[in-house]
Image (cartoon, rainbow, N blue to C red; front, side):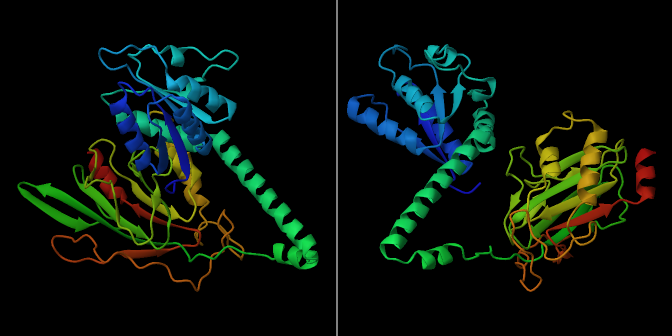
Length: 398
C-alpha cells in the first residue's frame, strides 16, 4: 500500500478522546493512510470544513471514547453531523469503539439509516491499541466498496477528460488527429526476470560452545538447532518463507505480520526470516522437513492465505495442499510451461535484457567471516527449496 492511497477521516467528539485520536491517527499513518482529523468545533464554519474533509476522504472512521472526567457525554456532538454526511455521501464507514463506553450514537442507527454491520465494528482495547488499529487498516484496504468507488471515480474522471478532448478537437477541426492520438497503444514498461539472493544459516549449542554453519539443500539438522534465512529480491515484489515439518505441518515465518500487504519487499533490501533477529528452532517432536522461500512480481494468493490464517484456522492437510499447489504452479521457468511473451498479472512483460537490482552490500556473516549470497533466477517468480535429509528427520524422532 503506497502512502496517501487511502484517505481516512477520523470523526471525533473533541472532549476526552485526545489520546485515542492521536494513537489511531499515528497507527493508520504507519499503514500508509493519509489521515484527516478536524478540530472539535461544531459551529457553522467549522462544520462546513469538516463536511468538506469527509467528502475528500474515501474512508470514514467514527471514534467512540468515554468523555473526559467531569464532562457531560451529551451536548453538541459534531459526530452526529459527520456520520449523517458520511451516509449521505456513501463513505466507507467503520466504528472504532471502546467497549467500556456506552455510546448511544454507536449502539443505535440513525433514523432512516441502516444499522452498522458486524464487520463495520472494531473494539478498541486501550491495553492493546495496535491490534485494533491494524484490524481497522485491514478492513479499509480489503473493502470491495472502496475499490469499486475508487474505480467509478476514475471512470468518471476519464469520461470528463474524454469529453473535454472531444470538444477541443471539434472546435479545432482536428477530430481525426485527436482520435488517433487517444488510441495510440501505450504498453507498460517491462520488468526483469525475478531474481532471489539468499543465504541460510544455522547454529547449534554443544555444551557452552555455539557453532555456526551454513544450511543448504540436504543439510542435516538436529533437535534444538536454530535456522535463519537472509534474502533480497532483484525487483520490487512479494516474498514468503514457509516451513514444513516432518509430520506434515506447514507454518509461515515471513511475513511476520498477518495484515495483507506485509509480504511486500523492495528491490535490493535485505530481509530476514524469522524477522526481528529471531531464529527458527528445530522442534524435537515435529522436526523440520523443508524450507521454502518464494517470491515474485505478483502476490501469491495461496501464500497470502497461509500468512493471514493461523495454524489452527485450517487443517494441516489443507495448508500443505495450498503450499504444494502453489509451488507446482509457479511461473519460474521450472514448474510450469510458460509461452512467450511472459507477462505478470498486471500485464507487464518479462524481458531478459533488463538487469535486476544487485544484492545488498551488507550481508550477514557466518562466524565473523564474510559470505556471499546464492542466486536463484526465475521468470515471474522464483523459489528456493531447502530440504532436510531423511537421516535428519529420523534422528529428530529418536
